[in-house]
Image 1 (tube, rainbow, N blue to C red):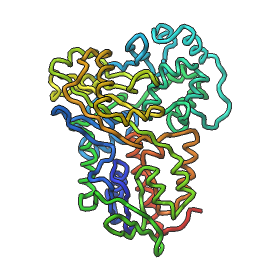
Image 2: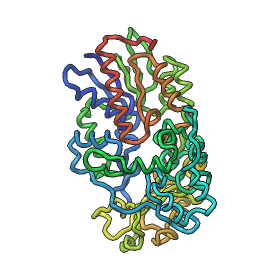
Image 3: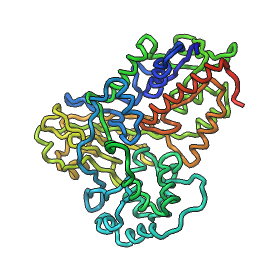
Image 4: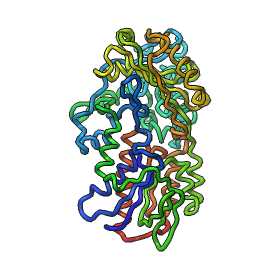
Length: 464
């Protein structure tokens, strides 16, 4: 295998693809990574607030998906992975913060526990319990997460318990989110066990090899260490930041990648940019694919980082944080960083991360920083017992940052991949998993596809 591969995008997906191409035993291609921003890492970023280094994007790896953890170990960072503290998660209710009932995805493994839980009405609990006797859906086509949940456990349990948690992970609306693309386990539970409650119980008691992986893992010193380590392994000389790609076209049986500062010939291209940016790049090569890519919606969010006065840490409850049902507060969720991820640098200060903006509330992202901090700060103070104003705060905006996996998303991605010319591969958050582990997996898969293509010696032919 030989040739040149251009990787567009130096986020976690693009860097992983480049690393995998270069780390392969045997003959390796020439690899060039082009990044529009002035830094690598994409949404993996940090911010210093009140002298404390905090995650401004994702703050952890999901332990049940192994690809991120495995990559950290491969990069020599495995010893710095730390599990979150064993404190419970809560949910906002009219009665205050209540602990989540036990069970995966907010679905209890014990209906009697739900019956005793004070956050729902008696009528809502009776409707949720009907999940144990309702018939399973016969159709196997994709449906919205909301449709499945409302059919099985009713509206109140859906909106009070499950939607805030699962919808919040995608900053999305469960009534538009695809089950097949987001949480296909739920459809399997219904088909296999005839009940979400029984499916949750079976999943919770499924034996695993070795110790069960922690739910969340962080990297000491911040997740930027992961992308920085990847960049070092790839070689900084191969990565060109502040170099946006403007066009990709066929020429002489291969590709030409035109960037703001140069023109590169390539035998294969991996595009790891947002779907709307990728659409512009493939327009001339595959207009039908570009139209499909533009159909992937994005929403904007903000992260509000707040550090409180010394002595405030003792006031906050023993909790990793809480999620909020849609429309109830200015924020969609809150992480009590000083409880979930305690660090000596915090001293006696409470440290909190809040999330603002999602499907249906994006307008809040455009509010002035002062208004966001003031509004969120007052709500946090009432719930956590901290002062109304943090000593230090910063608002980090992520515009058009969260792709929405609407019903039919899996089939849409199938069409995108089938419609691209061979040697041109797309990967990343918009396609087959939005978290860091899934992006790592997709980066590796993109490298495998490019390697297979180059080994066949075929250039620029249309997939059949």
